[in-house]
Length: 138
Image (tube, rainbow, N blue to C red; front, side, top):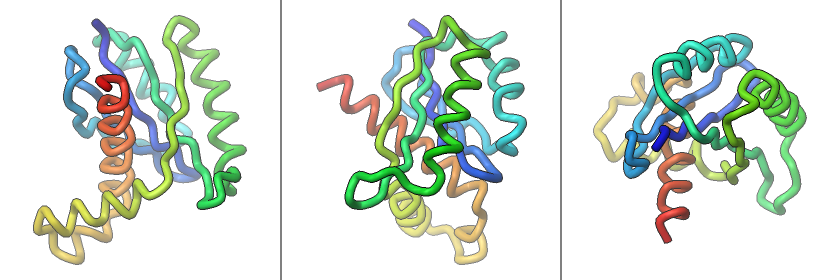
């Protein structure tokens, strides 16, 4: 069984999360400059079996695509081209940043630490992946 990688793709930074080999638990992997994420993933996939990418789909409250949606769709095409043998699915990413901030507060991080946007992006990817893992278990 291969790992699952969740991707919270953004204009500047991309948060990444990865499952354990049994696909039970999500953990943070990295935050990467967005134009370098495919290269980062190529290196990761060389060393680890990956069977699925879960890409956060940016939607607004009314379910319409947000302003970042076009960038995410272009990124998905790059991902498909770079990894033709790895499945890709899209997952709703609404509220992940809010949930990430709340997790940081609950975890006792100080205000200065909570302003670390790279950490927020990585935690958002963890939330996307954990939600996906819970969905497939049901």
